[in-house]
View 1 (tube, rainbow, N blue to C red):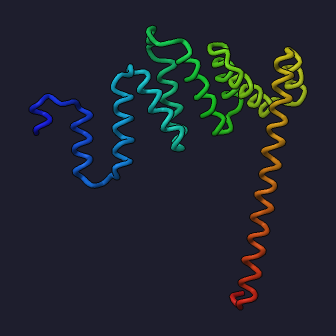
View 2: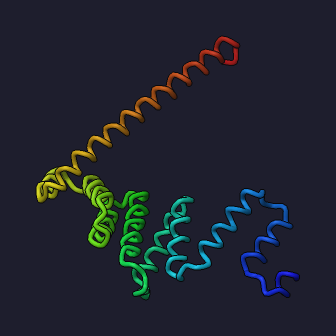
Length: 190
């Protein structure tokens, strides 16, 4: 009541209620306050993007896609930097990629690159193309540009590195399973 009487901010009001509820730790309350402060000065579409980013990060991919589409296909805010929309296209591409919809992901990454001219978006575009195109189509695509060829080489090295790391992890898991099985046999559990 004191905060309301003194015309305190909504953020102060919410933090006070959450603090008295004893649900959150001091660190969590600090994070909530930081988020509220950040969102306070953002425009409505920026808040929507923040929401979609959090949905994507938490695994609610389909919901994130719907919010990203709302931003892209809804009313535009001309006061926002054009790169804002490029980032939305890129994040939408990532969301489609998580659902293995590589053709759709490639389309979004290409749009993101056209706006932002960010090399990582182009690399993501090529990866999505590699996943949905047949070998000949992909080869024709990368031969269109020296940049594409260079990024393709980088991409293939990264994929090989990740695959080798996965093999090491699988080997470690197999070894751990054998150890556990041996322990159970030696203690008579099996």
